[in-house]
Image (cartoon, rainbow, N blue to C red; front, side, top):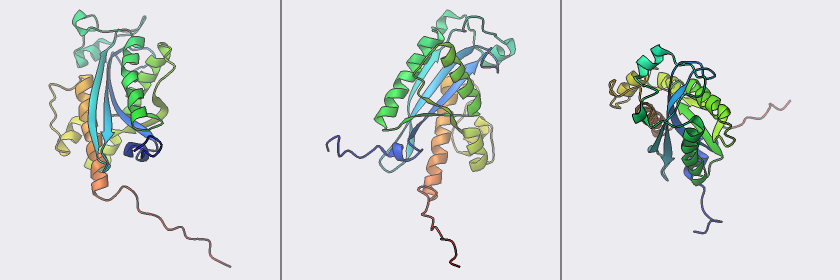
Length: 221
């Protein structure tokens, strides 16, 4: 089939032309303007010809604290990250985000989508840190939608009655290790599995594509 006659990728028909990309960040606090971004993981998603969503590649970068960044000790204790450990092989924000964004932009094009949309567990947190870091690093080609996100905490509350990632995964039949949690890659991959499971279950139940709605005209007077 020539490029002219090639059918659009099914992903481009599913989420308003957006490519969902699952992101998790590990940080040195809760304030994206002040606290350091320390680790970021992005999990690409793809879709088969029948519309089933599945997890693809995982991309991870360790990030050096930006100049003047605040490092809350309680946050470091929680994540177990030592920002100054040379074995982290951390890079500056601009380099790290560029390495994360590049395969995302490629995937957007391959799936015939317009741009990426961030999927996260409590997505606003991840979205705010990604955008604050991209602004500091003066990155012009941020592939993510500037405000739209998919929040798996909300979706899991609807689908499974629980908003905590570990509990939602267990209710969805997804193995979850608390020992491996709070690594950006691990949490992003589990969030991706949860998101794919919810989307696929919705389709399995007949929720997508939605049935046509009959438009009833105004009564004739």
